[in-house]
Length: 290
Image (cartoon, rainbow, N blue to C red; front, side, top):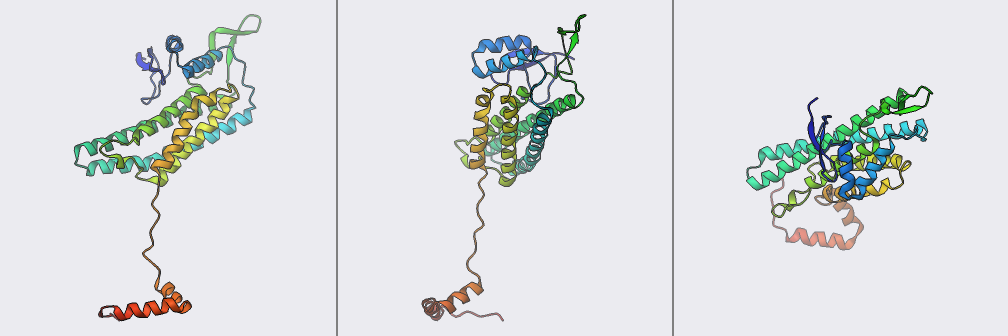
């Protein structure tokens, strides 16, 4: 496989990686890049590197298998809901793009659609990562080292059944998806009114499901690293803010009371009846169609 250039999802430290990942945010650091990430000074990157380094020598998870599987299945279901509900929004934006002739307005709509598509790819990649992790656990292949002549774990050959992407990577992809959705609905100076969901009900489900998946996976990661919650709290806050700001639905306005309601009010209140008589007396006669 030909080398490709990738970068740290947070600090943008570039590196050469021989693994091709799907989607613009599906990037990970190789060992050399990880050393440069540590030097970048970003606290979140440092913690991520430390967690990835600990995977080399860590023992099998202490989290009960049933608990891990439950959280994995729940997160995948939430992400599938996110992925499905991004579709109507992207579809509506593409339709709006085809019907918009004003150059700047159309450019804003195009950018929104592209960001929705990028976020969907990041969510799709995360589903694949979690499915791979689930499959390995289901097969009982986790942290499987080669052995020394004495039967001890032999680290130099790495681990069998170990995926390049970890739970931390999956969370990073989802945080990037959240950031991309934030960019999609960032108000512009000339067209701030465009920064709303075209399908608010679907987008509300997409955003709330993405936030729920982040919470589910973050809770799992926090069992290994209590500081993980700090790393992904901004993404959860952003998703809540987006849901409140861009998914507002306008309540259906009633045209007025029905004829039955007017008649009941006239019968129940003499003042209303008197006002109705006066209004009818002052009314311009019109032809009544039987």
